[in-house]
Image (cartoon, rainbow over all chains, first blue to last red; front, side, top):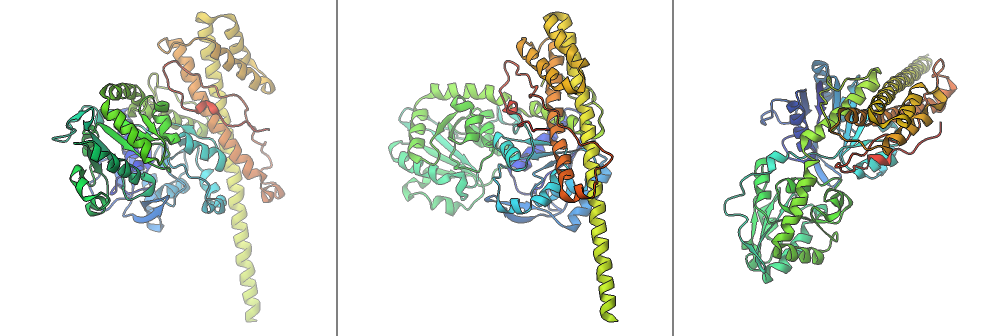
Length: 389
Length: 178
C-alpha cells in the first residue's frame, strides 16, 4: 500500500504526536508498505529518509503546550505537490482540527482520508464557533481513529461522529534490554536508597511536577540515598531552585534527552512517577516505562487507569495529592517483590501496545477507508494485513 | 452614471459569489452522497463475507443453528436484513471461537473488518444526511435524483476473543432513527 502520513507538529521538537507518527511509519515500512511522512521541519535538521519537510514551523500556544506548526499559502502549495507526487492509496492525517499541515492536507485530498485524533479536547468556544468550518474538514475524512477512550468520547459527543479506538503503540524492542545510564539506578533497600524519575516539562502545570517535588522533599530527609532523576526541556536553575539547598545534590537533571537516552533513563529508575493532573489523553510515557520494565506510579487519571489495567500493572495514587504519592513511593521502594509483580503484569499489558500489533489494526482502518471510497473490498493479502491481529 | 456602474458591478459580483457558493454546495452534496453509496456497497460486501465465513464454520462444526442464521443473513430481504445480521452476531457470540483455527480466524477477521465498515458507513451516511438536511439544500432540492442515504442499524459485530484486552470498541455508536 502507498501511504501518505501528515504530522502537524515540527520534528525539530520532540513530542507525543511526532513520535507516534515516526513509530507508526517505521512499523508500516516494516510490514512492507511504502510510506511518506510530511511534516514541518527546519531545512538543516536531520530527518529520517521517509520524511518530507514542508518548511519551517512557527511556535503557537495550544492546549496548554507550545506547538510548532506550519500553515499558509506556501505550506498549502507544498502539501498539494506532495499529495500529487505521492499518488497515495490512503492519506493518514494526525490532529486535522488544528490549523496545520494536516488540515491543509485534508482540504486538498481527493481520495480516502484517515484521521487520528490524539487530544481529548473538550468543546471550546473556538470549536463551537468554527463548527461550520470544521464540518467541511470533518466530512472529507473517511475514517477516524482515536488514540484513547477520552479522545473517542470527544469525537462521539462533540464532533457528532464515531471513531475507532486504537491506542498509541510503543516500540517495545527500543525500550526493553537497553543498558541503564552508568551508575544508575543504584541501591534500593528497605528504608534507604532508590531512584525515582520524572520525564517531561517540569514547568508545565498539568504535568504535575510540583506534586512529585513535594513528595520527594517530604520523603528524602527520612530516606538516605533516595535520588531523583529528571529529564525534559527547561532550565537547570529553574529546576534546582524548586528544591531546598540540602537536597539539591540528590536531584540529577539530564535536560532534553534523545529517544535512545529516554529508554536508558527509564531503565535507570526503580520507580517512574507520572504525577499529571489532567489533559493527558493517553499516557504514552506509561507504556514506555512499562516496556522498559520499570515500575510505574501514576496519578489516578482515567487514561492512566486504563493503561495500567486499573492498577494491576502499576500503582495509582490520588491525583494531585503529594501525601498519597509519598506513601506509595515508600511502600514500593521498600518492597522489591511488589515492584516485580507490577512489572511482570506490565509486560503482558505492553504486548498489546507493541507497534507491529497496533500498525496492523491501523492498516485495517486504511482498508475500510479505501473500501468506503470506491465500494470494493480489499483482500487481506493485498492490504498486507496478514494473520491475526 | 458613476454610481449606476458601481451598482451594476456590485450586483454582478454578488450574483457571481452566490452562484459559486451554490455550485460548491451542490457539488458537496453530490460528493457526500456518492461516498455514502460507496460505503454502503463496501458494508454490503463485508456483511456477505462474514455470513459466508460463518456458513463455512457452521458446516465444519457448529451445525444447524449457526448455519441457518448465516443462510438467513445471506438471503434476507432489505427490510429484514438488520434483524438477520444482529441474529447472526448473537449466534457467533454464542459459540466458542479459537483464533488458532483457520475457519474461526476467518470469522473473527471478517467480523473485525465488518465492524470498521459499519463504523465508516454510519459516519458517512450521517455526513451526507446532514448536508442534505440544510435548509438551502432542501429549498433548491440539490439532492434530487438520489435516495436519502440510509443508516444500517445493527449492533457492533466485534467478537471478543479470549486473551485480548477490551478496547472500548464495543460501546458502539448510539443508533439513530432512520
